[in-house]
Image (cartoon, rainbow, N blue to C red; front, side, top):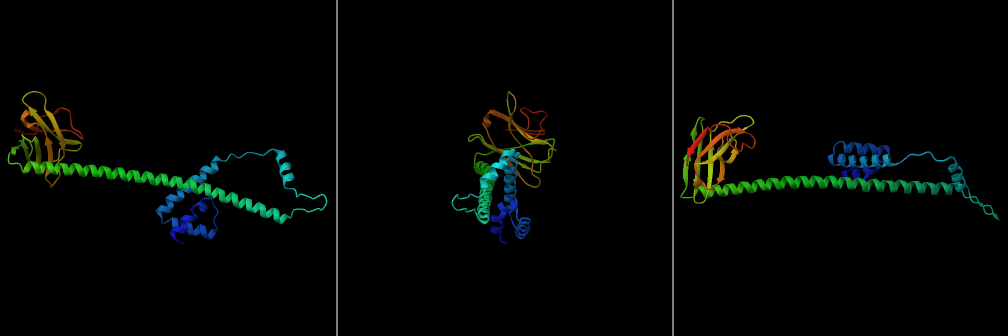
Amino acid sequence: MTHNQVAELLPAYALDALSPEDVRAVEDHVRGCQDCQRDLAAFTTVTAAMADSVLMTTPPPALRARVLEAVRPEVDVAVPRPVPHRARGLSFGWALGLAAAAAAVVVAVGAVGVILNQRLADLHTQLSRQTEQLNALSIRVTQQEQLLAIVTNPALKRATLAGSVVGDVQFVYDPASRLGALIVRNLTDPGQGRVYQLWLVAAAGAPQSAGVFRPVTGRSLVVPITADFTRYRAIAISVEQGPSGAPLPTAPPILSAIL
């Protein structure tokens, strides 16, 4: 049985209205098909909800008499013409068939709505994820453009940071364009839950945070910075609590340089 054939039988399977052969065929296919597993779960949920929504009551005793009276064969006074039992049975069978078909349609419509809502939610999640990736890529492109503008600038200035840890850390900047970048090589990891935080230090006042970073083992790291460097006399790095660092330094700097 093909995938499409099984998909068409799922509403009837949920209603327990298939032959034993079709039941086996559907179950064999569903075991290896995630799409059909998801759709069948939706159909089953809808049928269960429909069953739970039906209020079972005990009919009054007088109802039986009225029903028997209503289905009693009509008799012509002049010529007795009892309604054939076969005809009544056929009409009752048609009624049951129509009722089952109507129930199947209701279940199918409800389940399709559930499936469509789930797939719409999945698409929304995928779109959000792709939007985040696009934003991240846009930020990277902007940083690369900024770095290219810095390293190709003939007025570029350079400062080498030194201190209590081993590492090759350079700060390049252009006061006129206010563009700068911290270039980090071979700097040890700050420790679990910790980050390096970069500070711009003025002649007076508190240091200003210029961002946080963690080094990448075996790779150079470039941290773009935009600021009015003419206002600052030094640049420093301290180890702070991650992931966002601190509003002010909580420990002495491990690396620093005069601008």
